[in-house]
Image (cartoon, one colour):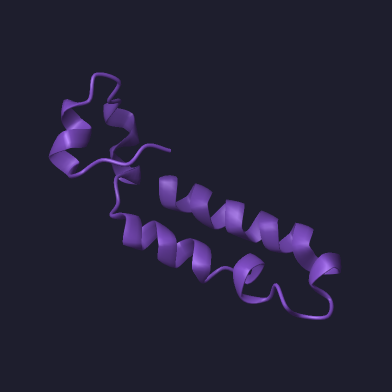
Length: 68
């Protein structure tokens, strides 16, 4: 993952790929997706280890959906 100062900077980047345009989001939006996930929110639950794989898969599915 690369971080850029602005969307304009992303588009000027030599490796920019227009097919990834949907994934250009402010860092705050990505942070909300990650911190709101059960993988983060439920880490102190008694059954976290048993459910961590499912939580991880949920997070990956959500990020994948956000990427299109």
